[in-house]
Length: 180
Length: 180
Image (cartoon, rainbow over the protein chains, first blue to last red):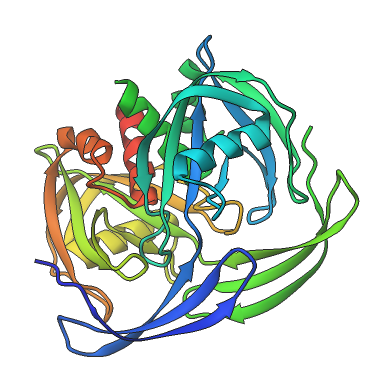
């Protein structure tokens, strides 16, 4: 059995606006030696598989600052303290980013974005029968374009590398497994 | 069309052992206002879908320091300067972590782990006909257990949350799309 490492110390290193870095000192259960591990702490995230009555997926194109590229993604973002739940956060992000609202919201998966170096969780919310009902409400860093993509095209868009955000691909896999 | 943001400055903030943080100052094409964006720079990563002649997947269980949990994953890691290519890096990680070696290595996908805040790429390598041929070579922080999992069980293990690492799930989706 793989054993957990015992934490013998922890130190907050550096704060950035949407994440912070922590150093944990731990003891290896295999060698007994001590090592430092750097962990990126973020709030939890949610992304949203929003489907329309005519079997389209509500996607967004946006410019991404980590990669300096325009990416085809699904709506989503950080779960705020003001959100009552991951589901409420997902519905809010869907509304703010695209103006769409739907029915029967349901969490269909949750992953660790990177358990090696990040502590947080990303939830995937599925919302059905989505319709355009609101004006968008972008924050200062956002500049989005909504695109309606036929659900049947999704596997091809993933396989051919037109969708590249790992967490979006995970959400689409959950959606496919759920529909199967 | 979504426009890229113009970068007008960049500053290296903080160096950590396996990543560093950079601040980019950019101008919004929509509002003309300037904003700072924090980017996590890492080397590129590779993970490996290693299949055996009898249709098992070579997986590993390991303790992960970001989440403090034992995770069921596939072999993989950082692409080093000494690696000739992502393919060579994947074959090396497979050998070091599990002792397995296979044939017909092929890159079946590449993603951005998080284009919002990270600049790097994660490649997925598929290696066929893998067999146990070497002793493992773990680095100081590693403590792994190899597990052979029937390929047919993979969708269920993802759907039920027994595999939780987002990049592993992406790799398994590529494998499934590739086999389809």
